[in-house]
Length: 594
Image (cartoon, rainbow, N blue to C red; front, side):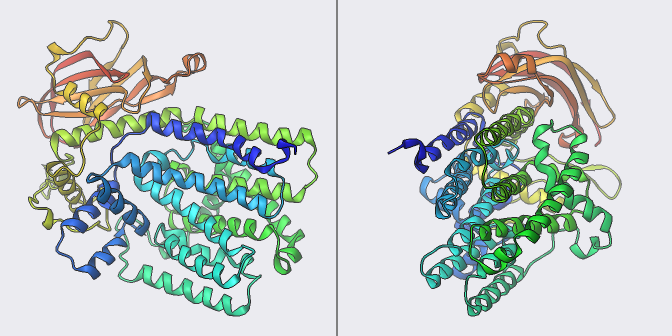
């Protein structure tokens, strides 16, 4: 028996990018919450276990609304994780969310085997799939358990519905999984439309049941729904036809963003052109295979369902975000959808030209490896800026038991309207709809959650971040000095913050919490921690060394909106391999106003 002809061999080869993907997560991931996590995870956990809700109210709490989503799957996973360990562990949640990525990989391999398609296809698909463009979805728990998981559940529904077993059994399982999908992410209900290419293989009674279930689930989702303050209404944007069309096509072509750095402007124009081209190619493909798609059961059924789901998602996004900058399309958490669309286009191309010569097959594999490699190369800088900011935030929260974020009062004065006031766990409500820094009530809710979380031990810093917290508290005389001349940083007071720049500043990031930090210390020895933002990947050193992420050139501003008024001493710290070195001290920095 020729091992090279067996699907298991190709599947094992396709695990190479998966191994790197999970190694990357474990090396740079941080056990820390970020943004929406405070409401959707911590707020939910505290309310579920310590609120005065009865059983019915607790069940409803599982599907409580956070912004426009009802993330029931996230709630259940968080609840189980906390119940088992007794603390919230965000790395565990990240790993579970990232596990959905492996689930998609397994489903695609099963799809190829089911329809006896070439097994080698799984190799280029895997290299494309495990890219770093959607790094938010492996380092940010809410995104990991929402965006990764919804893609997995959508594909699982299609795979089950398209099975070759007993239709009634498959259909019941598909309905159950569709329910989970709807309460995983807001776009989950789109699968009820996207699945119709597969449903053509079922009797008309199943069509009716499927449609009724879709309406019922959507109605349940919308029951008691509150529109988030910070989100525009779909109907408000319908008149913005030009913007909707523009965003729709850029969304479809946004997978080419992998070939550019996150600051490139050219990617918008190229994505627009690619999006229009692939949409036209998709229409031609559908027209040429219309009889097979409508009348016959084939491997195209699942492929069409996937593409309809992505097209519908792009359409909803384009309408809902028509009033926002086009660059928002490239936010990391959305890249998983554009990646899935690219994979479906590859499958479409291979279906259109099934007799692929050997050199062309190697060409596809080479393209996928290039795509995989560039996705990491062009996102390393964004990854380390994200994780070091995450580290700074959680250390600051551990020190302060809150986030300082100020608003202007009716007299135009700087006012602390978001100060935490709750003392007892039972006082905290469930996840809130309008989770945004634009509203004082939202900031206060987040601060109450942060305060209760640390005071009651729902979460504690991991060893690395705990060491940094201790180092940042330490008197400067006790901190080892960084080598002189290594950091040429410049600081200047701006109207609303402390501006910094360092053209020749370099750093070696071997862990997610490594980086450059500034610590504001007041007369009471209270500390506020902020990370410095790097502007460039140090390409020369990155090519030479592969043990860490190498970055250079810092630039940015630390807004005074995050600091109480007063006089501060500012300590500048360098952290490499979790070892803290003192770069310098700014003895007198006055903070006043916003």
